[in-house]
Length: 128
Image 1: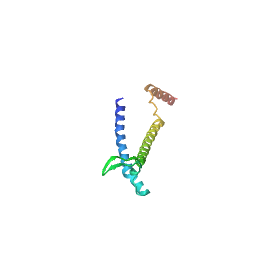
Image 2: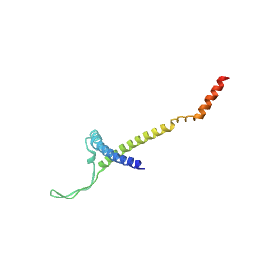
Image 3: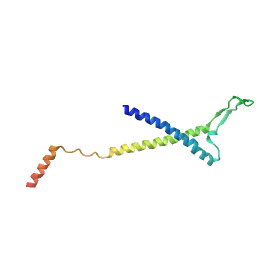
């Protein structure tokens, strides 16, 4: 059981690191490219303002209330990439397990007494 717990802990640590890599991939590489293709805007800045900020001079008294749907789009892309990777890994593992099950097992070696009896039978056949 200790080995399974260690394997699970390693998987969680690697999964967390993988999540950060995918987040960086989406935020720093994919979304800027998609934004440039669509018209040059950043998805992270897409939002709907429900209430504007209340200001007194240069000081913000009450911040603006916004719905940040651009960030939500980034998170959906993150999820889809991670889900695709997990799907491919599980599919590969299942394929490997299936090959192991399909491989015919090597026949068990015959006991020494059976081998000896077969040799005696063959010698008796040759004498006749």
